[in-house]
Image (tube, rainbow over all chains, first blue to last red):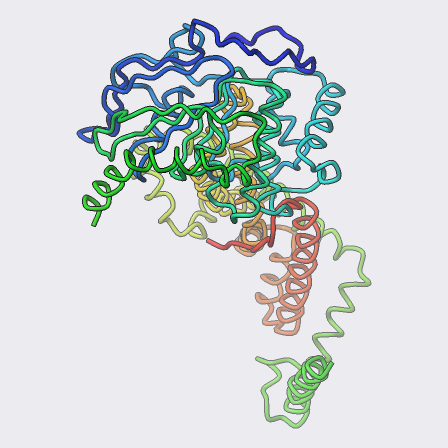
Length: 278
Length: 254
């Protein structure tokens, strides 16, 4: 795995122009488990600095796509490329925000945030400094010595965010990261995420079943069909200006209009998914 | 407060009644020696420097047996937990070994390792091994897949995974079974001594039994009880200082 030899702490200017070579490219990706085909022939690409969201009914194989990009699961057929390089194993220049608690329970918040740096062989002092910086960035300056079980759900999510972003990944993958949080905490975390992303625009692929979240955060919404054999149904651009406020943007009439349009496409899939599962 | 008073009352009634029973000839003192006589015997041992040689030997056997059993148990458990294929191949063998009542092995260990502390250490280690082994396997297998995937994405290679994910996960399980396994180490040491030894607490009890000295047998039992209570207390302290990251450390028994 190649780790780009750039400094971790000097922020680069946010790219305004979208590069011609996509950061992430999926081509005719099929993911199957035995006879069960979760997703079939999915092609999509995400540009550097783009925030894309995938929405779809539960069980449509959304997470499978993320795992293929992360290299956690091999694609049954088709190809996944990051920066034009074929994904063959677990990727380490990406940040992955899991839905579940994925912090190491036997390490403190500080140690958890440091982990990516530790694995990359960064010296202790530098690790401490950067971890403290990131803890402060996510509003947990004085919580570094706490263990995950001593933190609230929202605080744990913040630690996860700092942990995933401290290595300055080129691609950020998020698997329904805020679905387990209550609605107020979720809004706070969404804004937190937008703020961090605004500071340093990376390619983001967000998976969610919450259409409001997808529109509020992303620049493009990709609708996936009901599984099995899920595929891309439709793609919608979200031309709402940034920076945004995840809670207030929902009051914008353009937001409602977009919601109506995308929901019209998503609705059929959700109904199909229900009729199959019931 | 009231509970404590009731506890003391129970103690007084139990031992007072026992003492009185022996005193008035209701209880046969050959089988149930008077508590005060037992106490006198305990005191007799406590002031005797030679007694501490016996305690020292039993403690040594327990500790060495525990350490060997735990180390091999962790190593084998982590290895089999990480290699499901090897685990499947070895499964029937493990089941057979585990189904052998370990105490039966004591005479064989005496044959193999002699009457010294070797055979006792072997018995204690065997007893401890299986507990640690199964806990380590479980610990490795039950690592949260999200935690594992996260560590891999953060850049952990297999050595780092072992050190930062698998071993701490296994350690949790092992530490929670610490009390059970130390108890078994004590049992192993005592039974080994009981069956054939030249020193140790189990040897003292076996000697007394050989002379139909029931006072010393009861005194030995009392000493063992106190010994295990002290070990238990030490473990309490150890466990709470080692597993600081856990919400409520619940001791798990197998």
